[in-house]
Structures are given as structure tokens and as C-alpha cells.
Amino acid sequence: AVRRAVEQLYSRTWPGAPLDKLGTAFTDFDRLFNGQFPGYLGCDTVYHDVQHTLDDTLAMARLLAGYERSHSPDQRLGADRALLGIIVALFHDSGYIRQVDDTQHRNGAEFTRTHVMRGANFLAQYLPGLGLANWVPVATQVVHFTGYEVPFKDIRLDDFRDRRIGHLLGTADMMAQMADRCYLEKCRDRLYP
Image (cartoon, rainbow, N blue to C red; front, side):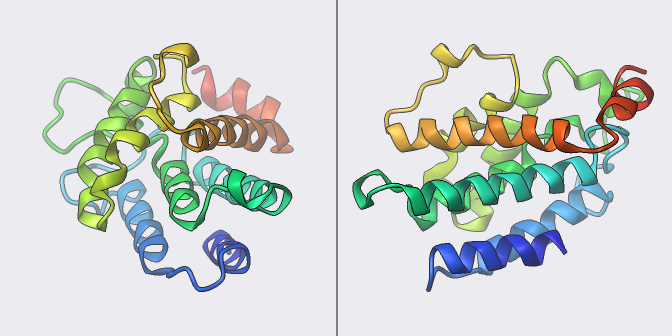
């Protein structure tokens, strides 16, 4: 349902923009988090899971569409940048997922302190296969708006629109978590253990 909602929102906001890369990204996200992506074991964290990521991605798509509709043409983000924002949202917590040859860590939660950089590394490897190699330098910076490994002032982006994508992504991440009606219980029962 989330995939369909995001695709519809994207199509309405950026008419004529192709959906193939977005569809592939959703399929690959599903494969990654369910342990069917080559080289990865799947998601074993009970807080930063499929549901959290889909909530974040839907929030991101809504924020992007709202931003696009409320700004003048010279301030708009455009379909390609918005696509990148949605894809980064889908994979922003991919750094929690262990690789198949990892015998050192018991579960993905052990990557809490480094998961954003690991997610940036995943995006750097993933995006070229999706035909988005030119966006790797932006994506690997934008994802840091979801964590604390790199202070915002140290995130290097040359275009104000890329920085805006980062701020929208960080906002979507927080909104999606806090808007969950079970947020407090999830923090107590899933996040902290």
C-alpha cells in the first residue's frame, strides 16, 4: 500500500516522470530487509524495521510533494532530486543490516553508532546499478541528516536543493517515528533493549 501511495504521489507531483527506478528501489528494499538481497542477511532489528522505513518513506514523499507544490519554479526540487530523496529514505537504515560474511556481530543493532555511514556505503554501491551513479556524492551526504555521526554543519552539499532534501529526510524520519501511535511502547520495548 505504501509503494502504491508513494508512486501515485510522485506521478501526480511530477507528471510524466518515469516510475521504473522507483519501482525497482521498492522491490530491492523489500529484498534487502527480508534477507533476499545478495550478500545481506536481512533486517533483524525490531525498531528500525520494514514498518519504520515505509513510514519514513511515505512521510518523505508527502513532504517532497508539499514542498514542490508550495515553491516557485526556481526553488523547486524537480523529479530527479525527489526520486533520490525517496530512494535515500527507503535505504536510510540499511546500515543496520548485516552482510552474510559478518561473523563478528550478533545483530544489526550493534551498528547503531555507525549505521548511517554504513547506509551511505550501501547507497554508494547500490545507486550505480539503478542508473543513478551521478547522485552518489549527494546521497551519501544527504543520508547523514537522519543521524548524528556527522554534524549538520559538516555535511557537504553544494546545491541548496540537496541540503533541503536532507532536511526533509531528517524531518520525515523524526515525524514518522513520533507520529506512530505506538511510539512510546516501541521505544521502551524495541529500541532500548
